[in-house]
Image (cartoon, rainbow, N blue to C red; front, side, top):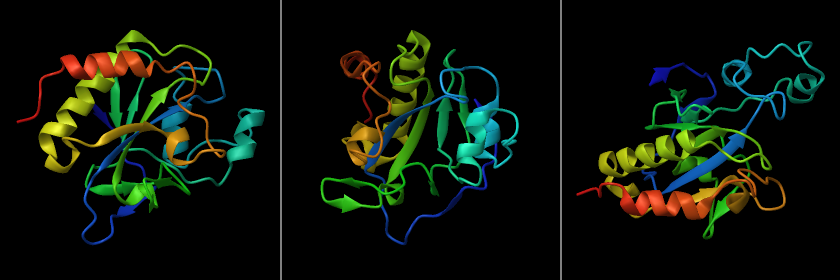
Length: 176
């Protein structure tokens, strides 16, 4: 696992307990993979003139705790005890500001291109490790960005195979 520091994070509110894992999908420019632009975006180093799409996200400060590349490689941008800026305006089960109590995991992908098998395996391993490390996540829901920001966000989209993730998680070693 690689570690790359994103400045787009801060401290979680006092007493905030982890209770949700949010799966996202991202590609920069949209539909392109493996070019390093996501990392630069999360570091606030995305040159607006490098692609017409980049000008539309200029000045946006976002991050995630983890990025899962198409090959399953993991990159951590924000330590898990910190609040990554991944969810934006959000609500889940009556709780607002999901960044306060969630882990954000970005998958390199789009709503309409199938995610890679290596990504499902890496995501499963990551979730299992998080559930072992953080007791409050042992029974936590795993949801999509679209579940916590309906109408505003669509990722990880219909190309994400929730049934496959559920199957892999059921087969993963249990947290004790």
